[in-house]
Length: 580
Image 1: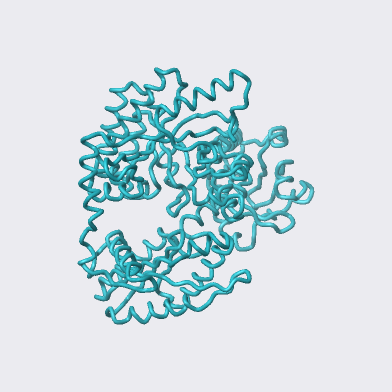
Image 2: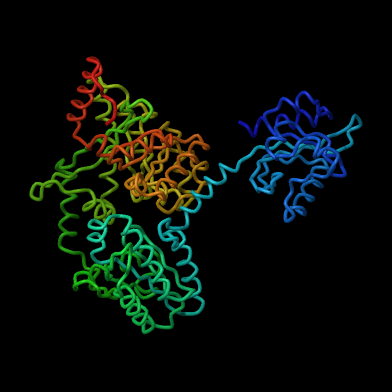
């Protein structure tokens, strides 16, 4: 809106050929004009406030706000405008009177006399420093792990792609190394997250000493690291690197007065021997790493095809999933989502549970990967969508207020299934309001095959449903896709929320995400809220919504009705029913 106002103002002045002083003085935007020689001819109070120069200090002089290294660029812009071109919403860097550099969004338009001759130009500027700072913080999340500064998965994949391209040309090999620290959780739990984080930073530094500059180290979150060893003539070059890593990690660490020792289980997969793409090699390196752990930890293992034989549990789960779908063993639980400003329950997230007839309740973390690998996630996901919409309408019939129903869409389901038709059918058969259905997609889905994904997302949006980015900030963040895909909400990943009250880095990240979302008119919801201090900070940051065990645990459908009924009853009796 501010950009449109600046553009309209500039066009109005340009058409009139005049720059009325009353308009300039009263404008909330910084406005100044220059003649063809570059001399400042008008300078309004907003410009004085923005740049720090009073009008009498700058009128009749060349523009003093341009940094020396930007003079050529500014001269080229001036020539374009003096030739009759208008430049709208250009982002530039300028200088205040005290020498401070800051970011501006500026609109430039030519000024003409009565005969139509360009006599100078008008500039309308707005300070965007705060917005740019928030964007830079979020962009940092897109490529780097905040704790260690190492490349994150997105940057690692880019480097991996470069290494593969080089390997194809040079007929060399690339190793993808999966490293998982042994017993790190014990250190974290006994000595605290601050010590654990400091140890991770030191481990990252030592890993950097073990590889070449052409190799890449990435932290994948928690205590897992990935390494890309590129341009290898053969496998014989890899064991010395792994032994060096093992030696460096076994050497004691001194962290906050504690002497700590650690080790790592390491799995290795090779290009092109074990696969030709990142996901395949990652899966095989992960398999090899678990075999190293099974061998007694502090070992490394190269992937072997024998490892690819599915474990008995995996096979049982796969066959069990088919039966579960046919015999109705799945159930949805619902975790309430609270609006922070009012304390009201405004929605729920539908969470899948499996009641196995023999094993009991099986957590999603165990069976969802199997469902995705087997493709069963598509029919399971279809059932989830249908059941969530049906349950929402049942709640309405029971007298509950309209609530957002948030449903996770698996990447496999999104790419392989006919999710648009599934959702359209569910909405039609249940009568559920599409504006109350919120689909949660991970960032990795949205930055995949962009044109195909964009087409699918547009079809979903045409149905009227909302789109939420799940686990936002975990490595794929890009400002461009947020606008392109017409996203409605960002779900801040619990990895940033969990230690919000004790970790300044997490606090800075969450604040930046909320600010950035606000500038793009997106709502934010924080997941994994587990204590009052975290909730208070989220309110302070102006986060819109929150969910987590501190507020309410996931519950069965009838339990949710009881939960809402109790809140309504307490409200009518003037009891306190807000959030904890």
